[in-house]
Amino acid sequence: MKPDHLKAFWGNHIRVQVDQENLDFVQAKDIAKEKAKAFADDPMLLSWYNGKNGEYYPRVECGRSDKPVWIVFAESRGADMAVDINEGEYIFLYLSLV
Image (cartoon, rainbow, N blue to C red; front, side, top):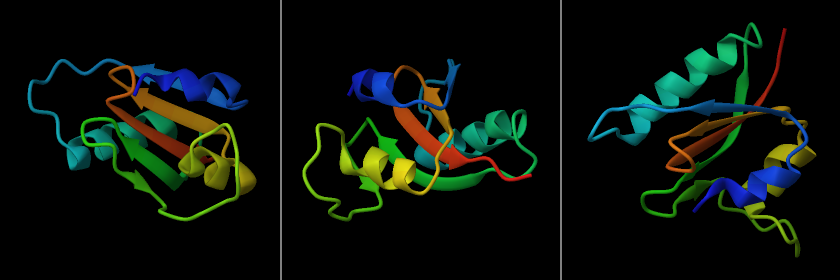
């Protein structure tokens, strides 16, 4: 997935390019958390998308929308920060907590 759906996300967009051949989910999540901490003392991860395999969290239904459910879920809970690693390879949505 290219992060086209993030164009409608109103929060901060943090784009990160990681030149690591076999970047896995855990490594990407750690990188995203560190990047988010530059903008908030204690960012809370609300949802994520793994572009390598199409998995996302949470796996819930939020009604019909033109956005993926994981974005709708996070936005409805106040997400204000998106960390996009390698142009959609991994995307993490956070709520800034002070």
